Picture (tube, one colour):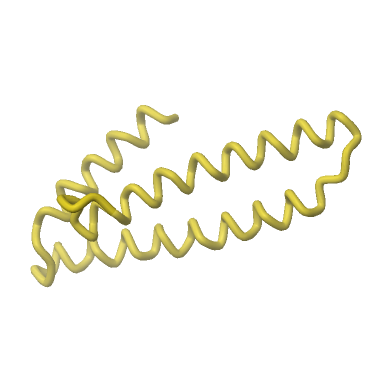
Length: 91
């Protein structure tokens, strides 16, 4: 965590990094399959990545909801906006 990174920014970073990990793991599974190599362990790891991603996304939604209710600093809202902009670039 950057010293200047807010908790909301950290969650946004985790979600973005998680999307990259899932995409990379999915591509790895495809390559292994095409080579006729076992994919079971890689698929289990992908499932774990997906579970973590769901937790990170839930955390992001909770922070967003807290901002809307005034329970959290509005800097989290700008973090979420940057998240959606960054997600567009990745896709």
